Length: 327
Image 1 (cartoon, rainbow, N blue to C red):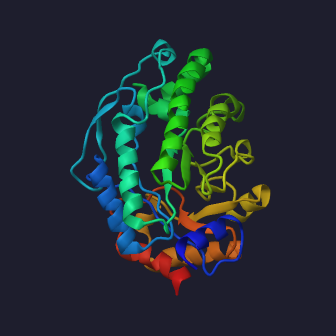
Image 2: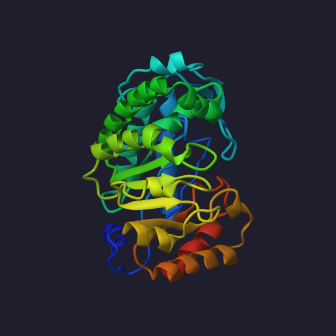
């Protein structure tokens, strides 16, 4: 099978010649421009020949649209430093307005996507990262995630208004991503878990905005929902209109086969993320890959990490995981 046929077949739960595989990771030194992100993504594609690509846009790019500024890193594994966080209060949140995603930092991401698509051709599926509005809010507030959660509870109407402005922007951005060459979204949240929003709060502060953005690209073949962290509220997302689910195994979260059984959708995972992967041997990561393939019987599975991996993960670990399905 060619890559697109293999990936789409796996998403549909059909028999495929082998399980698809991909990893994703930041390079903090190269992700600060369209050319840098595209060049690094295409390098990884050449080195590892992954079945699909999840280019790793810089995490702060969404918040940049509303005023976040940062100092970039010159080291591959050293993150950026925030120099200005724009929001301090519920009043600031309530004043947020939609912005044009074809300008600024998001326009830069779209340019990178178009370059990557041109570089790999149509045969390699690409999923493009979009953060849930509540996750973006954590980057915008001076108090970060804790303040975002606190203000959602103390000033819910202001939070609703701010999240709606972000969601309107990201829905338009999602449509632009497809036009630039993406096959769907890697749609992520990191607040829908026991130490974040409650299940009830997910229904107010996550679900309406998530569905607005996902509905904008409902026709895309490879929309994926990633719920990050331990003890996630998976039941709140089980009926989302996506082709696949991604989350961290362990930590009170469901297994690969359990999610597939409960949703009927494909699962993306089975492999370790940061920081665990940095301490593993090639034999250990290969064993993890084999167990995931066996658990799913080689169907409705795309091997990938629980989340992004360490930027300086040794190449031999990634090749060892891929060898399990490619031999």
